[in-house]
Image (cartoon, rainbow, N blue to C red):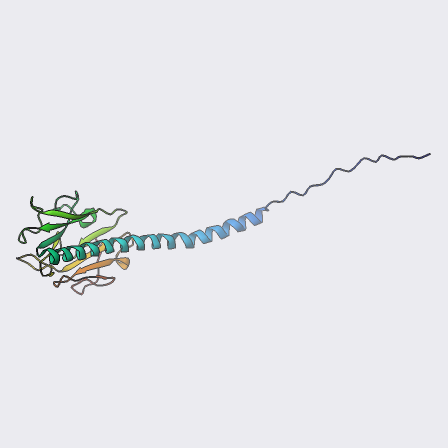
Length: 200
């Protein structure tokens, strides 16, 4: 006679994978180190891009104004402007925006007259970026280009430096330097007068 033995089957044992506390702490430590190194580097890259882009916009506006002055055989002015229509006074800074316009009167170059035509408008910049002239520079409020391409009005030559600064201070400042010849260049360390760039 055949006997069948039914033995109770043992329950299966499952292994549940996971992290131990030690492994989790090590992972968090590594992530924090990477963040400490990576975040400041990313902020610097972003800030460098912003300040360089703004400096390039300034240079482009001066090159455009000089080109239009030569092409049209007339005065063309770049001035700081908060509203994109008129030139700003002492209460307006370059970082609030600027405009390029054809100027019918070289003597009143810092004023948009009814007969003048606005060629291009540049909006203001934010994020704490400042654009300020070196003290006493003729480029304080505006830069005018003569029909010959030189910079200045019928009364005064225009040369000087506009200094771009951000939250990092003078060490990363950029200087947009205007020459009497109408040429413009960028500097990382010294202004047109030979002094080190300074931030407000």
